[in-house]
Image (cartoon, rainbow, N blue to C red; front, side):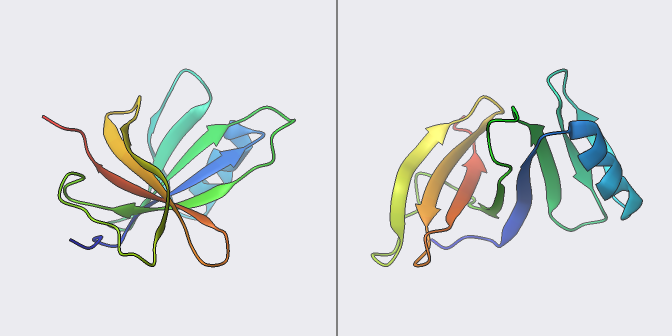
Length: 114
């Protein structure tokens, strides 16, 4: 089974409010925000942007999230380095982390098990 393309862009920031306003000025609309300085923005039918605030001692990161319809049926090709296998997340999905040949981390996200 292959991925189904880009589902989201996950960003960390030092200022949730400024980052959200930046994307809103580019046409994104706030889908929801949490009570811990994070939230999701959408622009049409494209991938959503999820932004989470991190402490100043952490460097802001960007991670692309690829959609996987079924974590149990997914088998990584031998050319894909699996950093962490599918694990349940606190936000109701299952997520795997893989590394590309240049060392970048990518997230594979699947629905939670029923």
